Amino acid sequence: MKPSRNLSANSPPPKSGARTKLLGAAIKLVRKNGFSATSVDQLCAEAGVSKGAFFHHFTNKDALGAAAADYWTETSSALFMKADYNRHDDPLDRYFGYLDFREEIATGAVEEFTCYAGTSLQECYGSSDAIRGAAYDSIAGHSARLAADLDQAIAKYGAPEGVTGMSLGSYTQAALQGAFILAKGRGNATPVHEAISHLRRYAQMLFTPKFKERSIK
Amino acid sequence: MKPSRNLSANSPPPKSGARTKLLGAAIKLVRKNGFSATSVDQLCAEAGVSKGAFFHHFTNKDALGAAAADYWTETSSALFMKADYNRHDDPLDRYFGYLDFREEIATGAVEEFTCYAGTSLQECYGSSDAIRGAAYDSIAGHSARLAADLDQAIAKYGAPEGVTGMSLGSYTQAALQGAFILAKGRGNATPVHEAISHLRRYAQMLFTPKFKERSIK
DNA sequence: TGACTCATACCGACTAGTTGGTATGTATTT
DNA sequence: AAATACATACCAACTAGTCGGTATGAGTCA
Image 1 (cartoon, each protein chain N blue to C red):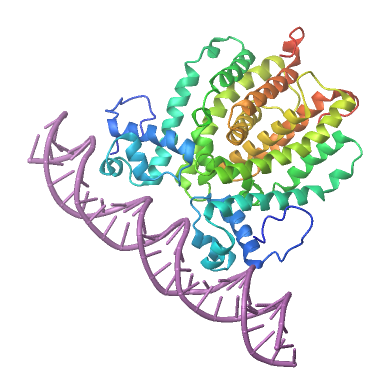
Image 2 (image 1 turned 90 degrees about the vertical axis):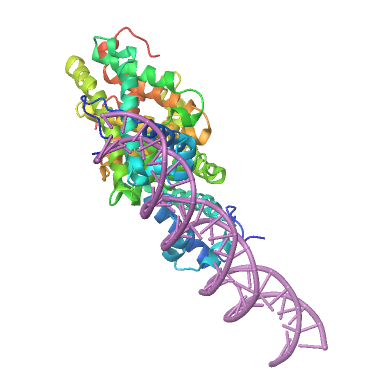
């Protein structure tokens, strides 16, 4: 039995050093150079482990790519869950808090705030089913958590016909993922900030009852 | 002098068969499998030309990737320029026509409606400056043409403070590019249709004077 | 306590095949 | 004749993946 695959709460397992180091290396290198352009040797060097360790923990390179997507899900969802904006009682405040938070963390080098899942899904669609699946699960899961808040907001404040929590959650992700691409082109985070500002304005307009007095930021 | 690099109007050049075939092959294969995962041999096979022809026309694989981005710019801008929606006198009508058109062409297999520039920019950021640059130019140029219409629309109808043609044009691109990523995950175009529907609603809300009577689609 | 077994974690040399790229040739056009 | 547009054969480097081996620690039983 593999020591991996512990998404469930129980069994805190060893978290064997090499495995985690390789996952971290994958996220770092793949975000910057892409999956195919990153060799197993490079990954091992970055992680400071041997090739033997690599293939001890992962059956092949694709398996690492998929496992890294799961790891990305774990680490990033932990980041978002512990963020302050979740404390708001109001679901719409939580959505705006989410946008603010995303804006805050979009700083520094582009390869440090862009999304592993989006990058590898884009690249590996067609060349690796395993990676594509894991990467999409990561993004879809993230959207779903947004959608829950948005559904509550819609129930509370109403929204134009056709606007659902799910569709708005997915759209938010789409706009962010696309902004990451533009950020890679420009070499800085301004497309992300711009996109978030438009998303914020869109939501303010959708949920007007909540913003009778509030001015557009 | 290379027979390539004919973005300027003059000199219709031979358009030597092999070169164009290779560019087409690149767009087809890279959109599906990514740049690094596509080998030179595969590209030659798809194009039906020899490896000698490849390196006769392109100094290396990266150069083909960059040239394919230019080729993508040419072919897709031709597609958009000849589309009917440009005939509208009203700039805002042209923007909505653009959205409708994008929705129309987002059908069939995912790898047939997604964007070569977005895919390769995402993947090659960090591993190839040449490709990154050419791919970004492609997207930025496309945004700029949208921005021109949107600036006219803003001048005509007004818009909330902070909304410029350029920022709205870039945002539109971002939302579409991101929707392409989600489409790759889902395996169909629904994220694209959803994104466009949100973009349409956003624009309708931004330019309310134009929509006193018109209902939200 | 200490010898024995067994599983996990890891190492690094090795290989078979693929990679991007080159060298050299020939047919066609100008 | 000379440049262009290809084709074929080839190569060195790199690739993912293998394989025999070691280190360590936990469980077992005498």
